[in-house]
Image 1: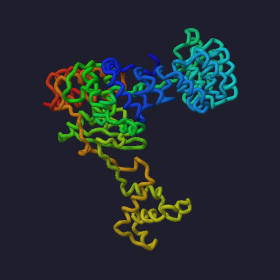
Image 2 (image 1 turned 90 degrees about the horizontal axis):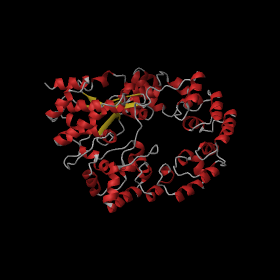
Image 3 (image 1 turned 180 degrees about the horizontal axis):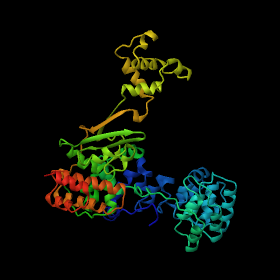
Image 4 (image 1 turned 180 degrees about the vertical axis):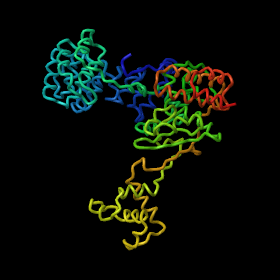
Length: 503
């Protein structure tokens, strides 16, 4: 399967068995701004008439009609601004590549020369020209080094200029990532003393695979929220016909395991686990119930470029409490707070930090004025007097009851995000449909199997999340004894400690 694409077996079944319902499903998506998202354009079952509406974003999909692609190729502006997308099109022809090799844009020309239908000999001259002139506007050099099968003469030249750098790595480091290198070429890298770039955290966050397109009706029903960049577009998709979700459920769709009732045979897969563990669905499933107990509550903590949401609990929350604030996002169950609708967040700017934001620790109004800070002089004066009340007589005014609130409101516009004290709680107005206690024992067993599958992952955010939710399962009073017995055999200290606490 081409890189970046996936096949959705549930959608495939809908097309085969319920063609009219499938057409309605596609029309719902095609009429929305969600049309260009990865969930849609990366799916091999999406037909051409839908992909046409996504235009340049659908170039990676072989189902994009060739006439639509030709239309994109004729627009030089589109070519120059979207060359990465253009060259993902799997149906690029020899004649199209021949034309692109003559294009005025240096990046288009470079990718065309490096293409399977390109001219690898001429590619050498191209690379020499761009590298010798230090043309850093040629962004494709590192990509060519990493992905293209290189003739020996091209490889030898790149080896001679291996210190030439791109945005993230040198040519030499990029060559180490090229899986097409021959044994002799790899040996040459070793003998030249070139080291690969080490990225110990490269696989921790996973490959960010898109949700299955068949998951969209479930996510809509569950009121799931995508990350901020696509949240608004998903919320504006009109409501899917409930029969579509019912059909996917009858086919054993993995997200149906989260919804009470509608029993069906569900296959436990790695792809299904990724869908289930995304978008805080499992956080909501467990936390909503567990927050009813006395020692389990939502806990929000911020710092520089960090605003994490987790829970406070004597056992499950301990690692979060003890980990440096800047490093806690990678812990199991932790996610970045982003005004999710199932939560209520509050931010308050303490008086001392409001004063700091306005005065930058200066104690003299004249010093602040000398720096050209005139816009908020009134609020600055108030801040200085609050900090040093004896200055009131010097400045010739007294503060009224509203002065501090006004000063803080002005400072709010200047303060950094980590200046605020933050908190969060479950939103009582949110109509939550996810609940561990409401699931049947059979669905609880299947969900356990999904999470147990995640324990086989190497060190990663997914594995950490799985351990957290298994610990929540161990804590929950409505977890069946059969599952508690299985949890006892998992060799994870956190889970064992939670189980021991039940007695």
